[in-house]
Image 1 (cartoon, rainbow, N blue to C red):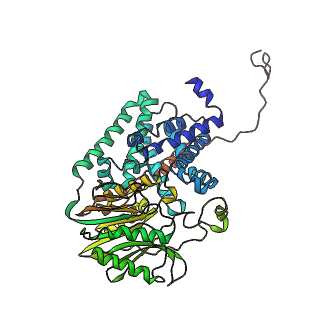
Image 2: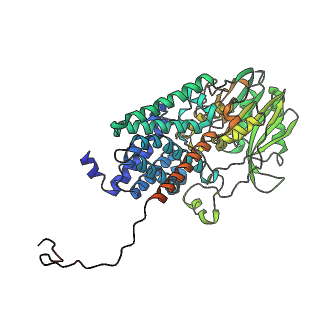
Image 3: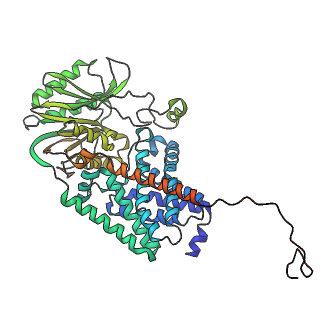
Length: 522
């Protein structure tokens, strides 16, 4: 250990280790999907920050770890944003600097049981505060939230129905802190074990007592995934060809992916008529997504539009939360140079103003989301509150076709379904398309990035309201209260500390017969 400590004395080596430690949680997300690794992935980062020689160095450990984490979960952007990926990761990574300081403040040296108990409350709350801040759409949104790594674990999905992905992140950090204490501070095993037991108790209680959605019938939803097709005209032709194959299959709704129509339907009534003809042929309404400059108002919009056998139904949702740099450049006057080093948006798309629940007929109501919006738990929760029976996310990740992005994006449907108690259809142009039931369970096959096909899903409908829909982001509110209490406590402790007295006037030492002022006793 002493040898390791000397090796880490170099600031550059220590920073490199912090970056690597922060990147480790990425292995818990798709494509690797080592969900169990999330329970220990933060331990190396915590062990490093607790041994920081100074509070300032702990801030750097937090920052470097945050940089590694953000770079890892967004690494698939490198071919498109190039150097700006590193800039963004460095800026967002700074959010973890205070978290690194808190780790050292509570766990350095040989912490008392009281400090460890505080760490089990404060450090998860601090992590949640970071996730809350970076979830703001202007900072990139909630991609890669730690709790999202548990999308395929049934007990975790039950917890998501109680407190959303926030509760999953909170409990995962509790487990990581407890494991770090067990590894590094063996004298204080009791509070660490108590934290693990409490986490297990919370999970068990949610499993046993949280209400389960009650299934109330099924509907047949078809997903049309054309695959990689160059050009909007050829893509439309392929979607039309695939949709015709659904004739006679008794479907209730057909969903095309994001940007499935590259022309404004107001300016191209011929395309609207062709889609209406498909609706008549298949006896089902079709939800398309138009990515084009509108003819009825200025600007480019991404819009979910419902078309029935008689043409446009008037049901329309304009995407509200846009992808930074991909669909708009934040502070373009300052950051517009990003368009010269990567594939940032040349022109900002316009935002919608409100979420929409669409009536597709026979009492079926759907809540559309567009691509990146499926990462935001509040949007699907509001759609469930407004009466949506099915959540529908239309997406296109063809730019990142060979990366980890498509499966990770598809996995979010499981969490949004479990949180809201409503099934979710994730329909893409090029994969991965997926459907999950009201408890987050997978329905039917995923359509991979190599598929150009249609798939009909028997989607179960559900009644009832989940605790998360009813009570909202309560784990976040609890975390904020914990951090506020910490701030008050720290302030009170500082106020009680006696202030050092100002030095008085210097008085020369007295001389005696046997002593000199310089060397007393001589």
